[in-house]
Image 1 (cartoon, rainbow, N blue to C red):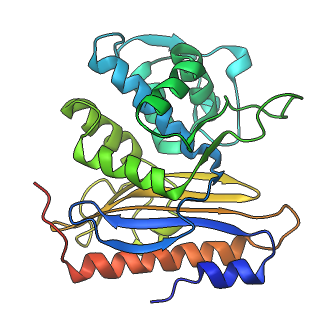
Image 2 (cartoon, one colour):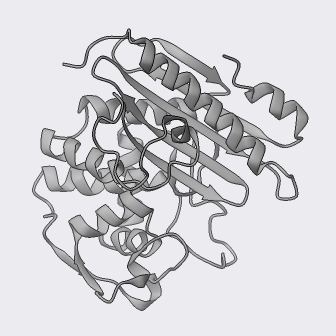
Length: 278
């Protein structure tokens, strides 16, 4: 099946994709386009914040039961749920769950204050990700001198992150499960994940032999979706990132191409193959 990354890039000046999908167990590449290209990924980089929290929990430096109070300066609406809640104080576990489920901006800012943006960035580099990272807390409007992107990445490194998360390469078993559970609560299935017809509110289990977790990023000129799609026989890590110019009429056509990328993954899952997860 042709996905159409290159064709759409030719048709829409300034549009760029970075895309890759790899079988976690066999190493087979299902699709690849501009996978080394670094793009704006909006909220996708929040995964590095969650990873750092769990790494600290693994070594006993922090407990997920610790409670934190959101400060007024950390309040953000738009993406999230916490801004609608009465409670100002939550456990770190609950704050992280809000980030995984609804990409909560207030939770991101609060957790980033607790962990430290510098610590997250150092942790990301130590894991070997030199072309991906969380660039800042969530700010709006952007003040002069602030980073222009919340996060950046390429598909190669994001697929590596997803694969290593799936195999438990960098965290202990409990933390590996916790990270995937947080991301498995993610409610945005509008991009690559749209191809599977899953319930956006409940899909962290097999549904028609498909199990999926993901993290997305969305602003007016960005759509990004990274994740893991599984059957009982196969695990596929994917990342599809797209950026376009502010005045381009690109969104609907980009989403259609991302959906076609998901169709390729769905066909691969249905066909079986790959290595069986241990």
